[in-house]
Image 1 (spheres, rainbow, N blue to C red):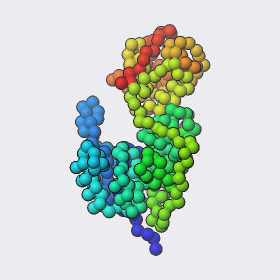
Image 2 (image 1 turned 45 degrees about the vertical axis):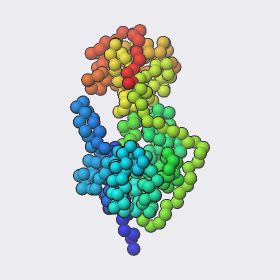
Image 3 (image 1 turned 45 degrees about the horizontal axis):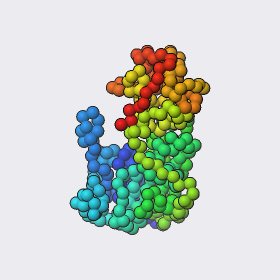
Image 4 (image 1 turned 30 degrees about the vertical axis):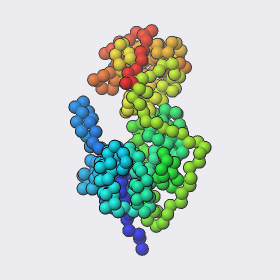
Amino acid sequence: MTPPPLRVAYAGTPAFAATALAALLEAGHEVPLVLTQPDRPAGRGLALQASPVKQLALARGLALAQPRSLRLDGRWPEDAGAARQALQAAAPDVMVVAAYGLILPPWVLEGPRLGCLNIHASLLPRWRGAAPIQRALEAGDAQTGITLMQMDAGLDTGAVLMAQALPIGPEDTSASLHERLAVLGAGLVVQALAALRRGPLPARAQPDEGASYAPKIDKAEAAIDWRLPAAVIERRLRAFDPFPGATTVLGGQPVKLWRGRVVPGQGEPGRVLRADAGALVLACGEGALELLTLQRAGAGRVTAREFLQRHPLAPGAQAGAGVGR
C-alpha cells in the first residue's frame, strides 16, 4: 500500500523557492501553509511587490502568512504569534524551506513531526550562508550543487540527507546557475519526500573540514578594483549578474559591466589598452580584461562595439572607481 502524500508547510521567497513549491504541488503533496517574506518595494516607482512564492501561493489558493519575524521575543511578536498559530493549525508532517530569508527559531524547527528540510544551493559544508551561488562563481569553483539538509539551530550546519553536484560552466552567471540549481533542487526535494513517506532518510553529519561562509552580496562589492587579476574581475562580472552588477566609470560616466574575457596585456590597472571597432580592453593588476557587454545608466545592455560607437574612448583613458553604493 502506497503511503499517503505528506502535509508540507513551505517557507520560501524568491523564484528559486517558487520552483520547488510548484514541484511539490505537482507531485501531489498537500501544502496547508506557505510562509514568505512581506511584500517589498521594487522598481522605479517603488511599489510593493509580492514575492514569487506569494504569487504562486495566491494562484494556487494556498493559505499564506508573511510575518516580519518568527521570534516570539523579537521586534514583532504579534507577527510571530500569528505565524505560530497558523503553523499549529496547519499541522504539517514536515516543513520545506528554500531561500526564505528569516531565521527559524526552535519552536518552528521542533514543530513538524518530521522536522524542517532545507534546499541549499551548494555542496555543504562549502558555502554556508546567504549567497552560495554568487560566492561559488566568484571563487572560481568548478562545481556546485544542491544539498538537502535536516535543519538545526546552526547556520546551514544540519545533517545532510541528499546532495547532487552540478558543474559550473565558463560562461555561467548567477542568473543561469540559479535557474539550473532551482530545477535540480525541486527534483531532489520531491525525490526526498517520496522516500520520506516510506521511512526516515539516512543522514550524515557535515564535516568541519571544507566549511566556508557565503555572506550576502553587498552593493559596495559591485565597484570593480582594477588592481585585481583579470581572472578575478571576470568571475565577479558573472557572479554579480544580475545583482548588483559590476560597476566602473568610463569616460566620466558610471557603467555596469556584464561580460568580459581575460586576454594578454599589461599596463596601469584600469588603463584602456585598446578601444576600437574590434575590442575594448582594460589593464588589470594581472593580465587584461576585454569587455564584451556593458550598460550605461538608463540604457540597455550593449556590445563593446555598440558602446564605443556611441561613447568613444581613447587608448590611455583611465577607468575610475565603480559606484557600489
